Length: 447
Image 1 (cartoon, rainbow, N blue to C red):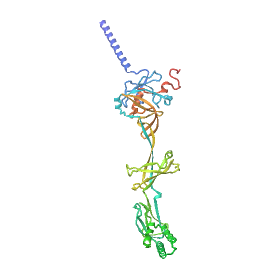
Image 2 (cartoon, rainbow, N blue to C red):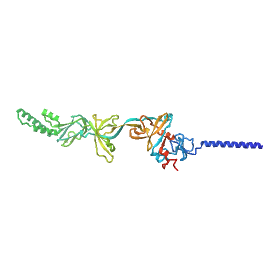
Image 3 (tube, rainbow, N blue to C red):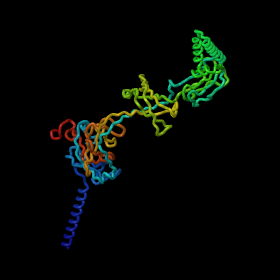
């Protein structure tokens, strides 16, 4: 009996030892390293976990360890707190302003295809800068005719009745009955008869001076040269004067009515020549140095989608609007078909050739606040983060001052995901942050 009791006790002790060993092994396998502070997601730094095999609850990515400060050297794929991430707590001040060292990292081609990576070549391209403005169409003041009555009389007939009518050159606008006109024309005809009689009798003196005086009075009453020539030919005086359009244009206003009396100085009709129109466009004061008379602009209007009109800068107003900080420039536009109408809003674009330069797409650049980074494709999944210096931005491309060579291929999309991979693999390290502490000493020399 004693022997059985001793064997049973020994068996129970052995089972307890085995269970304790298994529990210790399980606990040791799932516990984190003493140098690890917590585990986080590279895409979502707000996620913190103590489980080394955990996954991000937002995106499902594997969590990576964040080492404790002073807890030993960082291993590849580990981050020391948030060190090395610009703008995040824990980044050393020198890291944002001093140089940086980079090294290649690997993102398999299959993985790049999954996250939608596209590529672009670093190319030398012509640069074009475009200045844009808006304005409203107005008639050319020098091509506008206002007919004012120069005699007292009556409107005998209106040949145009409303604004908007298109009239051809020398087309009749209206006829005015005037007794004064009849008297002057009769005087002119009588002087012509006297001159003819004097010539037939061989007289030396002819009333040429009086004839020219009568002709001048007729011209002052808006009688044209052609109408005077017709009067000389027919020798028939008339009591009406017909006003003719001096050009092909559009009637702007007809303030008189047929049959009504008019006095000297009354407005009769106004005609505008729209074969050339103006646009007064506003340009900001920092753009004025790039403008000069004679430059060609492309004019577009919503009324004619896809159609462009050519305009020329003819005048730049030297006075700047104090509120808008802009100045107006007058643009002359040929308008033979009368498509552009007064009051219509149009867009003006001035394209300027800025030469050639090395360029990279805007989508390929990762701005970090203090520097600009691109990822250069080395082939077979190898990528290299490269810090570059940029010039001006032109539409969807940047001018590259330094950091890239012509023909290199860069990542043009999914840059943030590639940047996360580079952070995990430690491919982009701040030189100052890795080599120096906050007070400027190296970790080896810091007491």
